Image 1 (cartoon, rainbow, N blue to C red):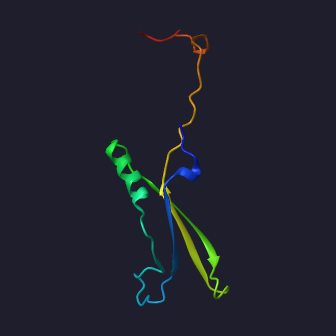
Image 2: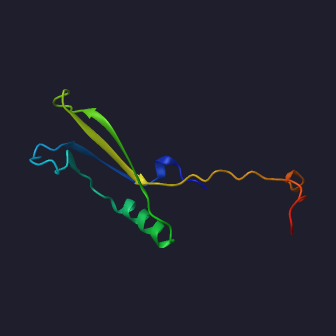
Image 3: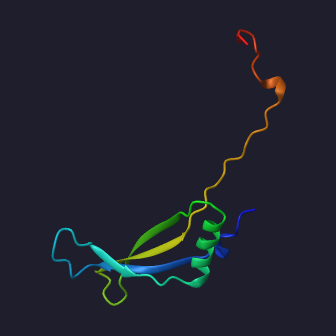
Length: 103
């Protein structure tokens, strides 16, 4: 059964333009995201099951409240769950004939 979106542990934060960038190899944006215990526990639980832990990241550009001409990026981070495609039931009669198979 799939979890409700609201029940999924997720964290968020803000990424700003890096005003301290002095070299081309420095990041263009930086920020700090506080990782809550519930989020970290969900990742550890997935890893303990032997599953690969994947994290989904999404960003939205938003104007700063104090100066709307400046934009920051709101970042949302949550554990990624692959959606399994439903498997279609196939009737045996629907399968092709075995004619022409050498064994």
